[in-house]
Length: 93
Image (cartoon, rainbow, N blue to C red):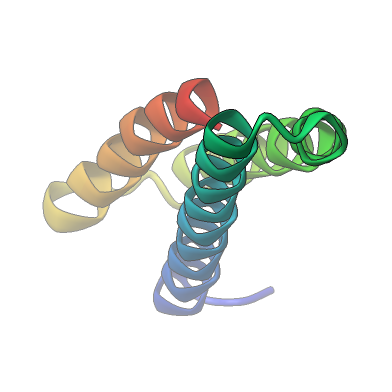
């Protein structure tokens, strides 16, 4: 079993991965919109499944983190912030 700090690093990396994925999605969507490129728009729609899957993984892992480690103070704020950020990123992506 990994300790709380190692699990925080994993959660943080997953959050960063979600941010990068959504950022790329927004860039592609903008490009598809401004160039009227339907193929690119379809690619954005297909990649939506990756955003949804990562959202579910982050949510599950964060729930597991809270249940397993009973975080307090900074760790609790981190996990709650990650859930909120993840929720909004999924909506954007």
